[in-house]
Amino acid sequence: MKIAICGTIASGKSEVCKEIAKKYPVLNCDELAKQCYNPKHEAYNKIVQLFGEEILNQQLIDLKSIAKIIFEDSNKRKSLENIIHPYVKKEILALNDSYNFVEIALLFECGWEDLFDKIVLVTCDMQIAIDRMIKNRGYDYNHALARLNSQFDPKVQIAKSDYVIYNNSTKENLVVEVEKMLERIIQ
Image 1 (cartoon, helix red, strand yellow):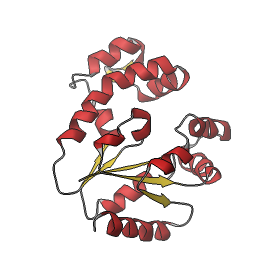
Image 2 (cartoon, rainbow, N blue to C red):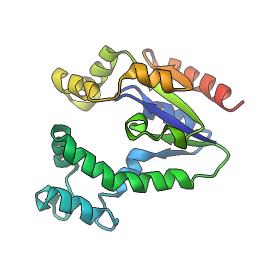
Image 3 (cartoon, rainbow, N blue to C red):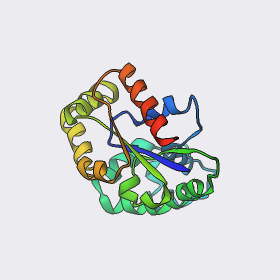
């Protein structure tokens, strides 16, 4: 069984996955994507060709430079996704344990819902997400709001999910919610 763990930025997906990882393996799609920036990865040269050598810092791709470019240029973002996503999808398709949890921020944006047997959405109120981005990521209010507004509509995500965890409270409450979700999903 493949189970997607998705959600909006600063919703707590990673915290949920840390709790799940205490019992089950969790594949992190962001980490898989980051492997593509390694000079030894076959996607590396395609990425450098797309953005030019100005994104390099001593042969290493500067991720902040790429983030700035793709946030401002949706065509470049789409081109980068066309390079990276096939590698990520291949790893998801290769999973074959009894329970495969996959942390995937862009599940709905990629249209990969059909790759999974169950979809778990982690979400929180918009102001809580903004406050978390300001506190934990150093974003200013406008940047945090722009990041949220660039994502798939949370209401649509909720409608497409099999289980929703609302992470508006404490870490202790989140742990309880994860346990409830695991009991329900793995029954």
